[in-house]
Length: 115
Length: 117
Image 1 (cartoon, rainbow over the protein chains, first blue to last red):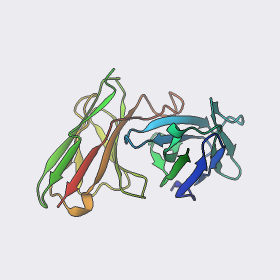
Image 2 (image 1 turned 90 degrees about the vertical axis):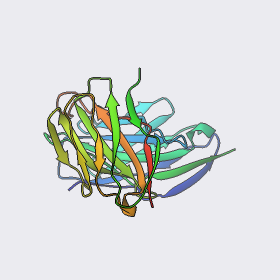
Image 3 (image 1 turned 180 degrees about the vertical axis):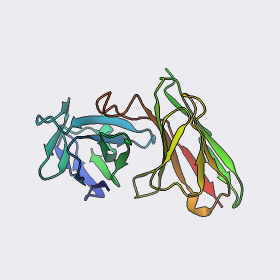
Image 4 (image 1 turned 180 degrees about the horizontal axis):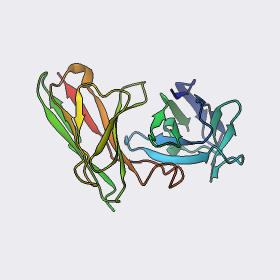
């Protein structure tokens, strides 16, 4: 069974700093996708970034980038020049490529950006 | 664009009552999901559907039922509400499986906060 682990329940950083959220996962699959979702206080779930396991190049999306280490099964999210609006819960998610596609989420990291 | 719409936004149930959480999407997505989010526990998959007429259990299906008679709708039924079902429920949809549309992300509704007392 696939599992997703986020080892940092809560983090705080000053505005404009860079912060890295960690995520590890366990799977025997070779082909899969990884996601980071953001959940602000509004409760809405928003896709931040997506990584395809067969691509070695790390995904980037403006101030958000990932460090994907397939052998280590690690998928960390880096937020550069953090902004107050980045305050949210962040969930790492795993999606296997199979006929029974399911998306498994980690428990989340609560990120506070301090003014 | 409405996206994924969930109703109601809030509901309080008494133990033993029944209710249906509604979910509809207007993006013609064939995959739909129900998750529950408990504090500090992330999202747990309850049921999912890969298309009309097809449903399957997720990680925590006990106490729930679903149906998928149309592509657009995926209601979640609680037959005998229990305090353990107090949670925030999210419906989500995606365009296709990872094989055919590579890693299509989930589109979420805004959630239903359910309290069972």
